Image (tube, rainbow, N blue to C red; front, side, top):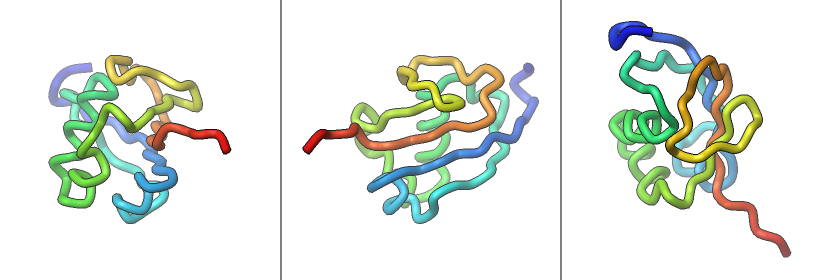
Length: 91
C-alpha cells in the first residue's frame, strides 16, 4: 500500500481511554503513512486535545489488532479493528 493510499478501520476505546477520547468506537480512514500501532497513536494524538490526553503516556495504553494483543511496534497489516485499553489489573 502506497503512502497516499487510505483504508478504513474501526477503532475501539475502553475504560479511561474511552472517557478521555469521548467515544467508545469510531470508523476512521487511516493515511497510508500509518503502518504500525505506534504510528497510529502518533496520528491519533494530532486529531485533537482529547486524543492527546488519552495517549499522553502511550507506554501504558495497550492495543489489540482484531482481538489479538500486540506491541506498539506491531504492523497494522490488514487489521479491520484496533482496540485501545489501559492495563488490566486484578482485584
